[in-house]
Length: 77
Image (cartoon, rainbow, N blue to C red; front, side, top):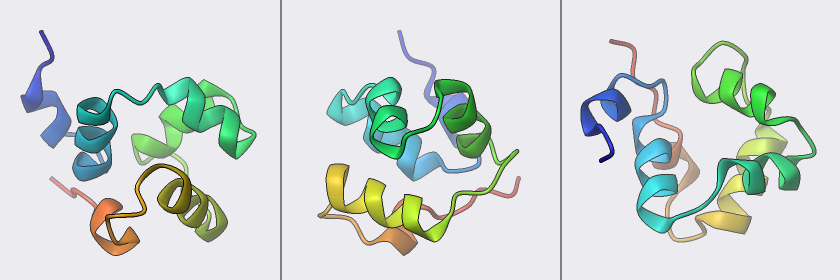
């Protein structure tokens, strides 16, 4: 079972939730961005920043129905 509490502790909880709910593989996102899964993990955990080009590509490819500003809303707790 997926631990939803851990989602809300992530740097980008809305992005994490949407990836999970839509059944998108993180390796698919990483491949589309041309980065490794580890690099994507670092970005999603707030260790490394997403570039604006990456934000736009993720938005347009996987989540065109969600504004980037909402999709990439940060969790600073």
